[in-house]
Image: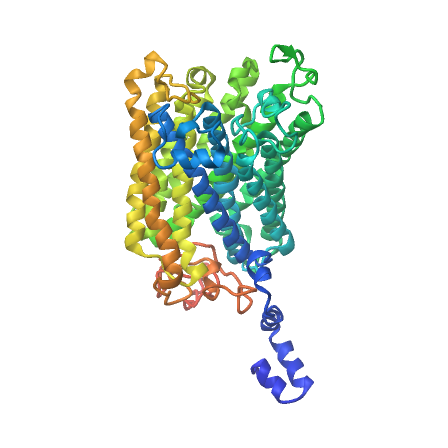
Length: 630
């Protein structure tokens, strides 16, 4: 029978007709089986659809980033005007967090330490990494593979909810007696073993213990997600999608997933051990002879504080690449699409990201030169810290060479992707002095470290995050974001980011300590650079205002944005643009085959300036003349 609609086949009254339709349309039948109307909580809350979960990760992460950014805004007031009441928010914070934390609207050292610890924790572990790896990864990677979903949909849902529970625990910790954790985002013992403990504190419901519980949930969710991601990339590629035909974003996600799979378990084990130190009287990280309040602590003995540092930084340094590698994948997709030509060297990108993944696992102790590790070990970590800069430079070079001679489309995604390049360069170059023990001895624990670290983790990552949102927003929603509001968002964001973090490098060279809660007011040698505190604070407050156009644009465009005119509005070549817009359950309406690499732009002899991966080559084949050997 002819390939007619299933409903028409049923109306003809024979099971044979309907069964015949099923046999001829297996893919369409698969979609119809999943078209059962689900209750709203299954469709939007406890969904197993990778696209919904990706959006859940993205929205949750953006809200957490807004929360973490708000903590920094309050800290910047304290650094610029120490001891003065916080305007507008001071009374509110006193009512919410208590008189002990904000007496008369003034930030205390305890509140400053709590805000700093939670700011670092949520921005790294619960905002940027989940958004860049899990948000974009969940939504985009199965589409770029031609897969109907992730390999383990229920595991995917579980990973999001573990992450969500961990984030809630961390934020609820502000409201327990004593407030949130105050031992920094690195939670160094023995301080972290002792903090928020004693007769006035609940053994579980205290800030430091809740920090450990929240991190345990977060890491568990991350591990579930990376196992799913690796399995999906290995097992669910469509026919023809060989390894060297993968979009670079998929390569970046794959290497990121392996980094997380190898580096997160040691930190989770360390978090559980520190939790046992706090609630079960063990001493994994508490040394012998620890004196607390003038007396020897009865539970201390035999522990090694440096063990925590090794376990923490074994994740803590790969975490930088966990955050930055997905941004490289996003930037690669956008640059190839908007230069309308292939990336300068796809293979260099792939081999470089694989090298970063390998070397990134063996450089963690360059965060620990001050611990006296010995010259031989110090030399090892200095050597490989320098070596890892080579593939990073190669990736930046590929992107720059890809721009050479191109007819560039300066749309919103491309503007943010281009801004990524100098920010990544500044972040990388400022890291080299910290990789060498001689210069690190001078710069360690100064604002130079904060400036370098934030250049990599804040402006670089966030500009790529915005680039990806503007780029894939039409596919996710079927509408375009407003270009005027996007440019109103871009320029102040780019300028104020540098206004915040560039002065930190200058203060660091002057030796201003990164943890002084008064911004250096009490140190004589800092007096000449204290005016930079005002520059950084004003820049931070303007950066907050600059996000208003983005928030308005994001939600306004959902309902009133211009509808896309095709499923491929950017005229791109990778498989996510072969789906309906927005994609339904199952993603693709028909089985796909991949015929070429991911960036077939401006192919000679082709009618269009792009040739999608899923379209067969229509160029006429010219018969080769036979050559007779004489």
